[in-house]
Length: 329
Ligand code: RAM
Image (tube, rainbow, N blue to C red):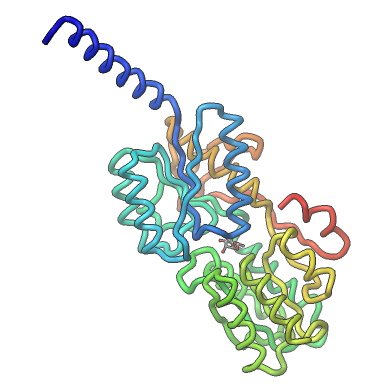
């Protein structure tokens, strides 16, 4: 090798090393969502970007499959492992199916947490619930029952049948149905967090249960589609659509009366908190029962015996406040 070539090679090697060093300083956190194109997760991503800006040395990789399947998420996880990200924060389409891929990620030293929709204990270091699951379950049935003084038939329009968060909330809701003896739960159907499938499922409910008085959709995609289906069927005032929605997406339904009221926590705060937790665990915070892990302006997450924590309480929106919130999330 000539002297010149040697110098050039040395420079190239040094540059590569420097490049690696510069890259290593940035913590890459992947926010894996149930599917792309869902407003709720886009709002959470805003919060993740806010946290990244505050932390300064963080890059957010916002990613997910095109539909709400575990298979799609497994592909995404495998590609993130190949990229060598520092942390994965996932809202899971199935608590068990994604666990082996996430275990592989943890074996490679990647920090893994779940948020919004949980992963089985062995597939993550901690899980961040938006709020107490019991409180959410109580809230969704109360929202329906409060407007049914004489009781009547209600049905649930959920996301996917394997979605951890919706299944937990529905279970919690069923535990307190006894408090509403005149309210009958006639069916639970699944719109898979797809607008068109949710719309058709809402139409199916109206056709099958002519006395239906309320549709409870504990999903932002489902509630929006159901309010549209009720509106198109000319059933505003007859069937109240409620559950969990985004003020920005539900303002029209509240105005028309298709939805009297609905609830949600702040999805921006949730994405922010999940990012802060991922970062702090990646930097050495121990995610173990009893631990309190800081989440920036959201305070601290204190982990219970299952390694779960809750962020804050849901808030109810109706005609009195929707205008104020519809431009925020
Ligand atoms: C949808 C998703 C998400 C859920 C919200 C309420 O956006 O299913 O997981 O938390 O609804």
